[in-house]
Length: 260
Length: 94
Image (cartoon, rainbow over all chains, first blue to last red; front, side):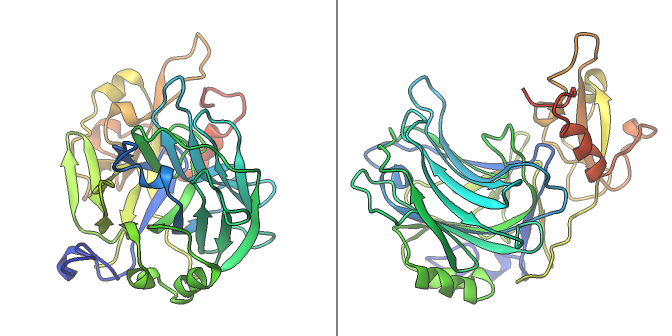
């Protein structure tokens, strides 16, 4: 399992020995990290293609649509852009939606879970996302346990502004569509991984293979022992943050379960 | 990989605003008898309430109920979720 210092010195005492995970209760729990992006230097995820992977297990209490992961530009009259991995409860489908800067011109990828929905077992969900205006048809896609879903619906979407952006797990904007269940090993790579690479990560059984994958720019394993207390906030350090990606994630009600 | 994760057992109480404002959310959260919200702002309130309803919030805690909320009815996660998922009730999000 990975820990702090992923790209420098591995620091075993700073991580729990066993796999750990976040629990969300579906009432109002969520996690949040703030990206202080600007167009020129740090707007990695809104200007470059990326791949997201995370491990998700919902519980039987899910009975409506929920948001698993989201990135949203700070609200302003002209900046309502978001990208969102969400679960359609009635259709048992996963969707990844990305809008342009005005929250319109939606691009969507989907994965039909059928009977194997996220409430029955743990899944590794990966998303490849095209953010560049040049676009690459058919690449924005959801993978579940290494299997690819339908490629994107909708055309290219415009660039975002690169203003401050917030990353959430477990809710939409931290205010609605609350997820209930467990999430861990949230990883984001620069660029789009192909299906074989995503299957490799899944086949490891645990996400440890992420260390072998280049261009990893954010990794919240959830086994990090380092917590920060800032005022009334509890933040967990993330194993890796590259460039100016946040160094910690705020736990708002979400709790960490770990083994010694 | 497919093994189920254990969901920690939490309890919930519904309190009026005045009671919530008196709670100490700064108690250490690694032991029992602790509140799991970070402060009173992070509580889920009944924002969709009717004019005659008091402002109330859902407070989550682990372990035994802290002294100041002993005696309040405790709800399990599934019970409290049922309340919040009504399409028309006071817990519906605006």
